[in-house]
Length: 227
Image 1 (cartoon, rainbow, N blue to C red):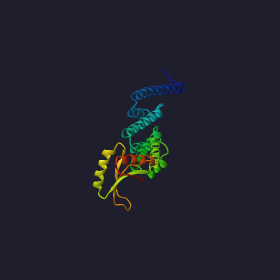
Image 2: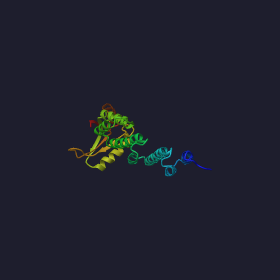
Image 3: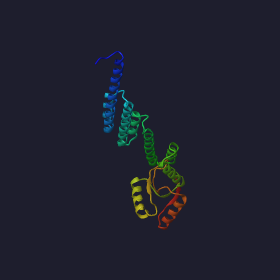
Image 4: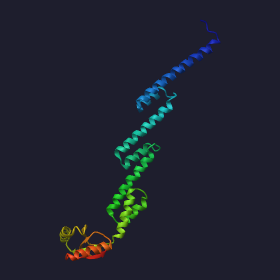
């Protein structure tokens, strides 16, 4: 068979077309295989063989998504602010970025609430409410603040120079009047006072007066004081 100058371009085009179709067929087959495995290694292998193929951008996107999911899974395992921060460093625009920020805020808020609870002062609670305006802890802080602001009184039951003596009396009073005075504590000396005071926990003025009246009927000395 003889080839003329006219037939050579036609043959060349046909051969290129056949090669292109074969390459496409191979790329499609390899892509289906990579999708079936759905791993970073599979998609990387696909890109090695088809760096500029019809599915190359999809492969890059799938690798990015898998890396994102793995980084998020690692963050969730630790469930700490540091863990979520590490996720954001790796995937600042990841699909879980908003949730990571939400989790960090929730963890920081919970830690701050624990601290405010421990202090249990009006100032600590007000500072917490000012810093965090939303969240379940904020509602608790507002309720606790309202309670503290209404409970300005205590029932004083005695004062002692010796803390051991004060503790002994406190334990005795707790046994005898624990149903009427739920919290009996020893308060350390403050200001110019050098005495250890045995008293109730904070309560409203009306509650303090009612408790003290009941104790006096049982011949227990007490007095209502404003804290």
